[in-house]
Image (cartoon, rainbow, N blue to C red; front, side, top):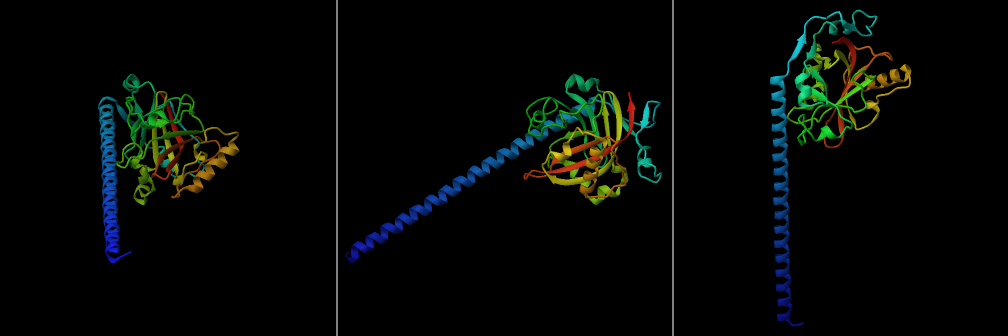
Length: 286
C-alpha cells in the first residue's frame, strides 16, 4: 500500500471515529432528555396526587367533628392495668380519647371503619377497609385513582370485636402526609415527650387509647402483621419479639392477654418498613 493510500485510510478511520463519537453524544443527550422528561412527569404526577389528597383531607376535616373526650364515662373500661403503680400506664389512662361522628364519613365512603391519631406526628386520618390490601395503595378516600393512597386497615381485621393485632397501613409520603411522619417516632425528640407515646383510635362502636411499646425499621416481612394466634403463650412470644426489636425502650408492660395495634409504612424504595406497636389500655363503648 503506497503512502497516499495509507493516508486516505487514516482519514476515513478518523472520520468514522468522529461520526461514532457524535452519535454517542447524540444518543446520550437523547437518553438524558428522556430521563429528564420521565422524572419531570413523575414529580408532576406526585405533586398532583398530593394536592388532591390534601384537598380531600381538608374537606373531611372541615365537615367531620373529631372531639377530644375530656372525661371518662360509665362505659369506659381500663384494660389490663400493670401491678406496678409507677408504670407510665397510669399516666396515659388519664389522657383524652378521641370521639368521631361517622355519619358524614360513611356517606362519603362506606368503607370507613375508624379514625386514627398519633401524638407528635401528622397522623390524623379516617381509616378505611376493603376486601384486600391493595386497593387503597392507589386510591384516595373518595376512591379516585391516586398514588398517594389512603390510610387503611388490614382486610383480615374485625372491627366489631378487635383482634389481638389490629393493623393499619399507609404510604410514607416524603411531604409528611399519610404515614410519612411516622419516621418522627424514631427520633429522640419525639421520644422525650412522653405525651407522644399514645395512639388514639375511634370506630363506630368504640373509642380506644393505646400505649406505644415498640418502634423500629425492618425489611418487608409477614411476621409482625400476624393477626391470629393459637394461644396467649404464642401471642406473648410474639409481643416479646416486637419489644426486643424496638429502637427505643418504652415503659410498657405487654402480656398474652393484651390486644395491640400495629402501624406500618414504607421507609424507602428498598422495601424497608417503619413500624409502631401499641397496646390497648382504655376503651369506651359508644
